[in-house]
Length: 262
Image 1 (spheres, helix red, strand yellow):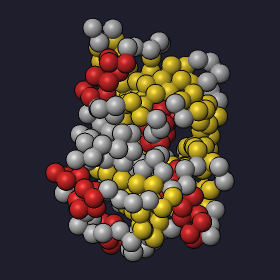
Image 2 (cartoon, rainbow, N blue to C red; image 1 turned 120 degrees about the horizontal axis):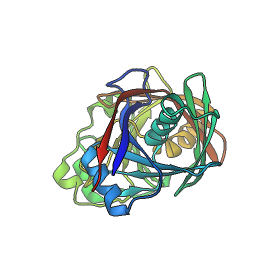
Image 3 (cartoon, rainbow, N blue to C red; image 1 turned 180 degrees about the vertical axis):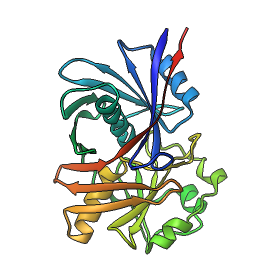
Image 4 (cartoon, rainbow, N blue to C red; image 1 turned 90 degrees about the vertical axis):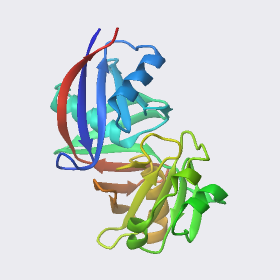
């Protein structure tokens, strides 16, 4: 069976920036083990599969290892694919997902994603994660992901992970966010996933479900500009809406192609 495949860089206005995601449109769902094999073959952080149901788009996200409950950059990539490649007519796209219905509004090349808010709460960091970090955080919180708060953007950029220790824990489906106030934006972050084939995710939309309410409260601001300071750099425009957050960004198509399943 022949399928189309689109690779799109999300949360960036240029190729080779942001976070690459693969997008695969389907007429009907393939078995889950095939979806996982496709994601593994694609070898990017996330592959998004979708089936157009007419009023809604049924969307699922797979890493090379597992199905995810929520993924921001692959949602943004899917919206970009629908609008710029597949000629989706409406500027409002409703995705049916494991995290409920997610709405994306397309506004002059900016994709505004309405996601759930996940305020992190104070927690205790597992020892193997703590010992894997070359710089210790000043605060530890947790929602789906651990949120580690640091003093400065320089700290965030200088963090290294001892992967042998880090991979001793499985946070399925979560990860570890490190964050601080930014030098030239409201806040910066990086994101790491233990036991994943890709240790550092270049730009993590779902992490901002926790980062936005945290920094909105800490900085007394409802609208925030964020950078994920991985090697590829991602730019996110954020808004705190109480029980929801708006995560906005741009995207660029890197490649289009086809693949076959038996």
